[in-house]
Length: 446
Ligand code: PLP
Image (tube, rainbow, N blue to C red; front, side):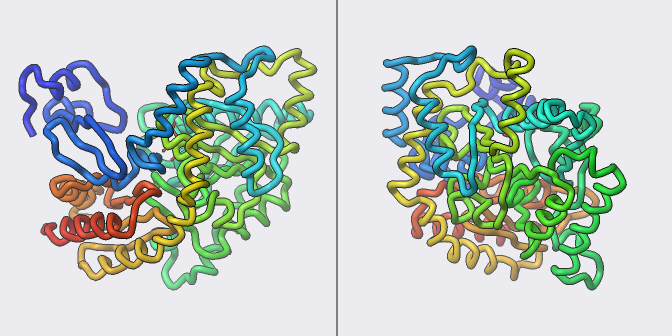
């Protein structure tokens, strides 16, 4: 693609620094400009239609152009377009959303703190843990264990939690006090001849060893996505979460579930914690919370977290944290309506119902000699392609381009090509998506 002078692509390249793009490549090639969306489809500025195979960024559960969300935003805009939740002020949408999330929680939870993005939510988690450690008179208990390939965002603290090289390189991250333990990707990290069971036992032992060598009294929490998304759609082996939770319990270490991708049905149950048997102290939610029609995220915590934080705010005189947009009334109103739609249309049930077809069609593609591995659960999955030559990502980028050409947007994370379609997808549409994906794969030659 070459950029035409004065085109929207040229103006884009002239004025925007884009997320997760090579800025020099983008200046030369421009971006794909999307104009409209309806259901599982989006249309670019040339009129070409694509299936959005990644729901935007793993987020548009109810699809594009959902009139009820547009109406909910409009109605709230008319009534109270903005108010904050600082200094003992509140408004009905934030109250109702907090109440609804506590009701939905798979384990007893106490309070919700609202933020605007997954990164801000995880940044808030780090601050809550530090504040709590001071409140409890254990100021040395502040380290957080995350995982290699985990993704938790890009603020200074949340990028530190993220365990991917691009988020650290040249940013001088991670921060001290954030540690990374092993990734539960059996196909990627198992040793020769190691069974899944042995692999899980080794990861749990490595975690235990890390805690012992750092000092159990220095570790506040462990954070993980129930199923890793941006790290390459990594579904942990059977028994992994039980083994990890047993170690954390032994040392009184809190568990944080980052549900930013898994939450609201993606894995075939309402929360990834339910699918994976996780009992967290904190849950982090965003994306499918509002189908990303409005930026909103939430940190839900139990009383073990909340009570010391409340005491400390009482001691200091205020909880000195919060965002102008925390609990934004329009975001909260849209999220409430979005959850209503997910429940009324049983989109979680739809994900569970279509999951066998989704997995079957992905698995069928593993016959192709370019494929290294297939991974998936619910309506999230990926094919990992074999690396071509020395460079990671050549095969993945070629597959992504072949899909785009054929009218399907997917995301390649290195050589892993991820799929995460809107939860409203029908059986016929899922087959349409896979017909394109299979044709794109068949077209590749290296
Ligand atoms: N946590 C997880 C699991 C994510 O997948 C993401 C984004 O993809 C984030 C946190 C960060 O969210 P945001 O991009 O809204 O800051």
